[in-house]
Image 1 (cartoon, rainbow, N blue to C red):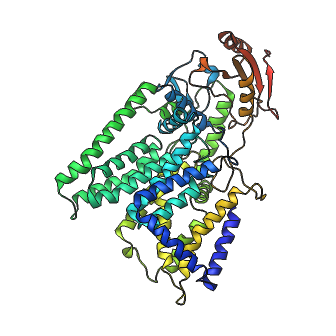
Image 2 (image 1 turned 90 degrees about the vertical axis):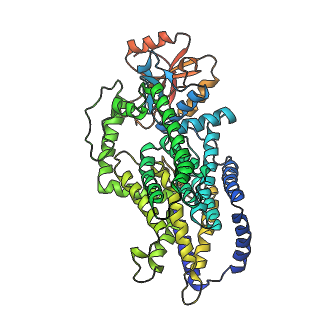
Image 3 (image 1 turned 120 degrees about the vertical axis):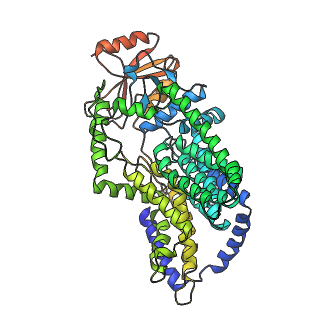
Length: 563
């Protein structure tokens, strides 16, 4: 798919130099209607969000409701199940050692290891729509609307509308942000609200803009706390510099309309987070993620840290994951090759060839002798924000996935659209070559969207990825979902003991349970020694006990026999 996209970009370049006026009449007619819609800012935001929702719903026949595969997905689904039942966490199960698994705390309480935002949106989908997927679906549409709103604060309306629609095509349809329970959209929403509120606050000092910035900060704190904090630092500095600068409003206006509402919202957020942490970990300033890392992890989180001593593991597969896999991944992330891999992964997810094209063209069309002094203050601030965030991401040593950089999603679209605005004015030998190139970019995005939708019947190969971008496909289920469906059809309640072979792949994890383990139709547990298994079976004496041999191809479900 990337090869096809690159080829279309090359074709567009050739046409721009040879037939720069091709399709001008059709483009002009379309653009007039586009501009009329863009000028109605509120309607444009709604149209972008509804387009994302309608397109994803229309793709359900070829891209059905996803099954969870990745560890974190099961963790977020546990949080969603917990919140949907009206609880913040769950008591530790008396047989918790049998249920230890990745991305889940067992002690001091039984809950997801991550911040609660993703679990809350999944819980809303479960309560309102009957399935957590509808929370993912709604968050993807809301993300595109938030990006469009943000862009309206930095760019003319028609460019903001275009950016929102590009986000629909690249982020909210085929990417894993819209096709898994792993998250990403909420971080992008938080970043967009913070980024879009700043120019509005400086322009008009409205309370609602301060509250929207506070909401964005709250979302970041409860979805991507570290990356959100790094992303937010330049905005805090910019607000202080503005309030103390020569173009500042009266101090009482800033305090009443900006500082006070923003501070109140952040205080409520801090209080709510502290209460949640207290209920989950027993300490209002101790995050669940900290407990998970202290309990299981050996690999460091930041570059300046060293590997810790190995914790005591009850299960070999968990030792293999936290010691072997994570330590190797941490060492790779510290290396130049690892940094390059992070960059390539982020580039393919957020940009690809077609959105990289206007950025590269800037290097060609900028006038000779162009210097940093000619860059506007607004652009300098955006570049500084991006640089600080990238440095912050580079300090992390764990495996990188694109949602780590989700707060930057809206900012990336600002850069792309600014480059397109500059490109459209470029002329080559009097001809408006840059205008044709600019018009070709959204056309190529639409063509690639259609090709991706028809990739299977057209036999276009798609690469598989755990965190798929729009041009990839997600990981296939390793068999758990099919076995679970079979177990749901068997009369009576089930206890499944999961048996792994010595070389089991730790990313293919089966042992995940509902929030109320004792009330679940199916309970998954790890195989331990025969006496320990017998103890578990006695606890669940009213259930049918079976064993799943997870590493068989296909996996096999057998009656339990002690070894």
